Image (cartoon, rainbow, N blue to C red; front, side):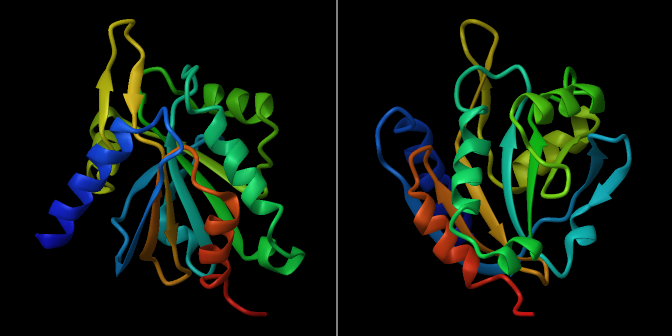
Length: 190
C-alpha cells in the first residue's frame, strides 16, 4: 500500500511536469505485473516470454504526436550506452494505450517509421480490457485531452531477467545514461 501511494504521488508529479526537465527514479524489487498481449506480428506474447533478458518497458500509441515518438528515441539513445553483449540480453517493449486503433499492422508501421528493430523491440496491443489492465497494473495515467488525443505519463520501467520490476524512471527527460546505468546492473552476464 505504501508503494502504491508513493507511486501515485510520483506519477502525478511526472504527469504534471512532463513539459519541464524533471525526472524521477523509483527503485523496487517486486514481481512485475504479468500481461499477455498481441505483438506487431499478431502473435500472443506474455511478459514471461522475455525471461532471461532485461526488459525496458514503456507505454505508447501510434497516433500520438506528443511524447510517443520521443520515448523510443530516448530508449534508442540509452541503447547506445550498452555493449554488444549487453544489447543481446536486453529487449524493449512498448504497450499501446490505444488498443481500439492500434492493430498489429499499425504497430508494424510505427516500428518502421521510427526505425525500431524487431530483433530488439516488441510492440503490444490487445483488447481494451487487456490494455487497460496492463496500464493500470503499471500505474500508467491515461486521459483524453480536449482534441481527443490521449495524455499519458512518460515512463521507462526496468524489469530484470527473472521478471522482477526493479526500477522506474518517470519523466520524458530522464537522462539516458541513468537508464543505461540501472539497466546494466540487470543485464545477465554471459
